[in-house]
Amino acid sequence: MSLMGNERKDLKILYVLVTLGLSAILLYPLGCVLMQSFATQGEEAGLFHNYTALLNQERFWVALGHSFTVSGLSALISASLAFLCAYGLHFTLIDKRIKKIFQIIVLLPLFLPSITYGFAVIYSFGRLGLVSQLIAPPPFSIYGFWGLLFADVIYTLPAAFLILHNAFYYVDRNFTIVSRLMGDSPLRTFYMTAFRPVAGALISAFILSFFLAFTDFGIPVSIAGEYSVIATELYMTMMGAIPNFGEGAVIAMAMLVPSIVSVVLLRYAERFNFRYNKLSKGDVSANPLRDRLFMGYYGLIALALLSVFVVMFVVPFVKQWPYQPYFTLDVVKRILSDDAVWQVYTHSVAVALASAFVGCVVCFVAGLIKARSNLSGWCQTTMDIFAMIANTVPGMVLGIGFLFAMSGTWLANTFLILILANLVHFFTTPYMMATSAFSKMNAGWETTGALMGDSWIKTVWRVIIPNSWSTILHMFQYFFVSAMVTISAVVFLTGARTMLLTTKIKELQYFEKFEEIFVLSLLIFFTNVFAKCLFDYLAEQAEKPNNTFFQSLTRTLNQLISKLWGRRATSQSLS
Image (cartoon, rainbow, N blue to C red; front, side, top):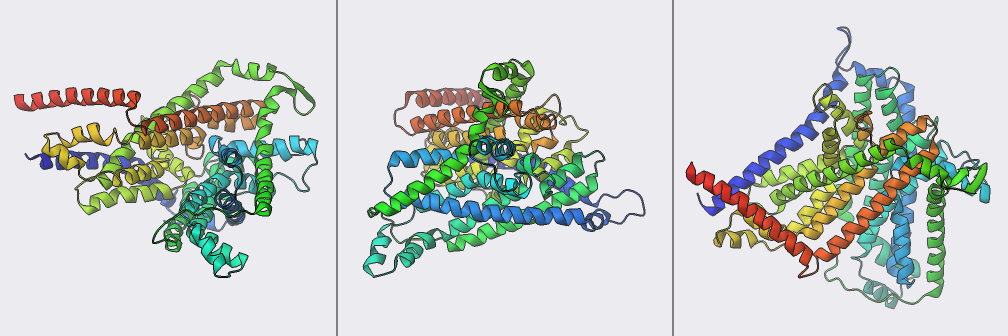
């Protein structure tokens, strides 16, 4: 068989494995949700009994209306705030160190589970909260709509900011000079040179923020109170005193509709993207008043974010908040001396590491099939379809699907089911990272390797992987951090033996043990910050030429694959 034939055979095997695997852990659970929504109890019930029963309930429509209202408003606010944040970083002369510090503050919420935001808002702006004690309580109840809106803005702001911050990198500032020379008014100059070029990204930021707020479970369960939303309605239907799996499946299907619409709108938003014939970076004009205004704006945003999360560093370190606000380490020592806490922490880190490893392998292979294979176009399109579906399905729907699909099997109540759920839940972004990186590499490496007598797998190990270390590390980081903070999918899948930090926080809520909640949140926060710093450093080192660590790691992988390939060749010759 020719070398190209061997390459095609290896790719076909990998394609079949990835397709079957993703079908089993993505399409099959979704199919189970669909089938369960039509399941009936009793012969008299019709095929659409669950749908008609739920759609006739006023509470469902109320919860759905609440979800659309708070998600729409939070998305509008976060997209607007993120636009101004990103604009100021690219179109002002504020000191670079201040800009860097502000970026770090804006991205802090990424390292915490969303369920923590609600508790932090309560302890900051509640009647006895930290900010309320220092300044004044807010003129509205923090429970319900206003608290949910505030927490959702904090939750969605980092994602919207990342989209717009990246979009402004590709805005040509020279057009600002041209606009002024043509006599345009300041407002028209702003519209034509700053707003219009990122209009598509702004629409995408709004849609993504809406999707995140609409499908999130952690924030509503912690602060929504009696203000019901679709996520809490689904949880109570599935996990209440009398579970109703049929209606729960219908609610899950209803949550898919806005998700699918969001993906379609994201595709539509791409037509608003602005493209230059040639990109050049001009200098930002001096404007002290503009810079001072943005400094004040950044100060307000930073103050609002820090005022929420600083409470996590206060409550666990006082004797009893707010009645005995004296510094002490007794509370932290008491909580951390509990072996059960460290057991749950170990579970979370182990699941996150395993999810990151498995996820990187699957996304890496899927990226190879998409960007660096000679398989049929429909084979490559299959990977994009899986990515699109995984990006569309909310975490809660995915968790319900796994619950229906794996209940009664050996996978139920195991760590493996959590790893598989994380793999599917966070598949899209690392897959896009891998695809983007592979598409930019030299297209002739595999051909050169084949001419030199190397098999396709050897070329991947010896050439593709060594040139992908930075991307692989960023993929690993994304999986790890996401797995540490997720709750929406795993809340339906964990048990007493497989408890994670986020689901433990959910359990502690019932007992109102907020000190423990903040300590566990700090464990997640510091673990994620350490992971990000570590993987960012390793990725930076990987991009440097002649790095001894990655050179030795590459040699070790090459020796391993050579031994494995030698054994394979020997077995083939003997047969």
